[in-house]
Length: 119
Image (cartoon, rainbow, N blue to C red; front, side, top):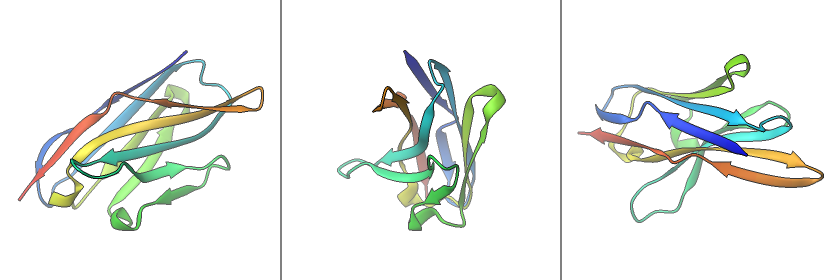
C-alpha cells in the first residue's frame, strides 16, 4: 500500500509563510504524478500545485508567484513552500500521488493538514 503523511500546517498571519511536507512510503514506484490540493469550507477541492507525469510543474493561477512545489526524491518527500499567504489561502491542504500499475491509475491521498491565515 501507499501512505502519504502531510505536515507543516498551522496558523499564520497574512503575509507570512509556511512550508508543507508530504512524506510518501510504501509501494510508490511507478509514481505518475503528484499534487497538492486544498479544500476550504463550503468549496470544492482544487489543485494548488503539482508535478505532471513528465516532471513539469503547474500551479493554480491564484498561487502563482507565491507558492513553490518541490520534492526530494531520495527522501520520497514533496514540499509546498507558501509565501505571501492570504486569508483566502485558508483550507485543508492534502497531497495526492497517482501511481500506475498494470495500466491502471490509482490515486492515493494523505489525511490533510490545516492551514489558517489570519488577517
